[in-house]
Length: 364
Image 1 (cartoon, one colour):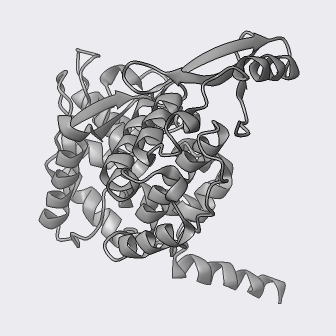
Image 2: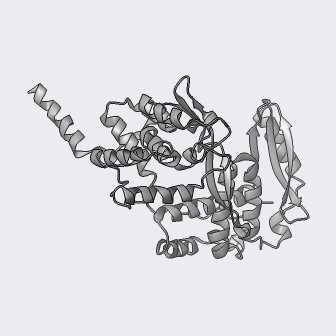
Image 3: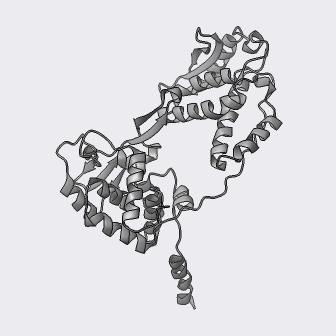
C-alpha cells in the first residue's frame, strides 16, 4: 500500500480533524472521511487506523489515474478552505493550461523533462509570472497525489522560471498635478473615484466595490470592506464576484484628507447602499472603469500607457517623499508587511535620492 501523509488540521473548537480518502463518489470524485482527536497524535492515529481499510485508488485504476482526475480531486479538497476568487483562479489555470497539457496523461508518466519542455513552450507566449503560477498549481496537484497515496513515485521536481523584476511607472509630481487639475475641473462621481485612488492608494476592485455606507463622514474615514473581481467560470463564461478584500490586512480604515472629504460631501448619496462610482445599486465593472481611466489620461494629455495600478504606486512613492513612516503607509495600503510596501510600491525619484545624498553636506 503506498505511503500516504494524512491531512490533519486544528479546528476552531480545539479538536484536530484528520481526513483520508476512501474510494469514489458516484460523480467520480474522491470520497473523504474525517476522524477527530483531542491532540494531533490522536487524530493521526485514528486516521492511520481508518485509512488502513481504504481503497487503494492507484491499484483500482491499474496505476492509470489521470492528471485530470487528480486535478478534480485536488480542487474539491481545496474549495472549503480558500476564498471563492482563489478557487476560480485555480479552476481557470487548470482548465486553460494544466488539463490541456497533462490532463489525459497518467500521473505516473509525468516526468521532469516533460514539464521543462512544456515550460519552455509556455514561456514563448506567456509572461514568466503566469508560467510560474501555472507550474505552482501543478506542483500542488502532484504533491497532493503523493500525499493521498495516488502514486507510488514522489512528485517530480519542478523548477520555476525566474521572474524579472517589473518596473512600474509612476506619475511625476507634474503629471500628478496635471491629472488632479483635470479631474477637478469638471468633476463627477467617476472622476472623483480616480482622485480617491490617487490620494488613498485604493485598488481598482476596492473603488469599484465602495459604497456610501463605507464612508464615515464624522470621523473622515473610508472603510475598505469589499472588492469586485472579474471571474472566469470556464464554459459558463465570465461573472463578477463581490468578495472580501485581497487579504485580512486589506480590510482596513483609511483616513481621508480634508480636500477629499469636501468632494465626498458634495456628492454624498442618501442611499447608503449605493455604490460611490454610480450613485446607484449597480456597480461599475473594473475593466470598464480602467478604460474610463485611459480616456481621462488621453483627455488630460498624459501618456496612455499608465495603468490604473499606477495610481496606487504613485500614492505610495509620493507618501514616502512627503515623510510618511513606512508602517503607517503599509497599513493604509493594506499590505501584510512593511517589506512588501518598500520593495514593491515605493519608487524613489532622482530628486529624493539627491536630497538624501545632500544630507552628507551637513556632516562635512
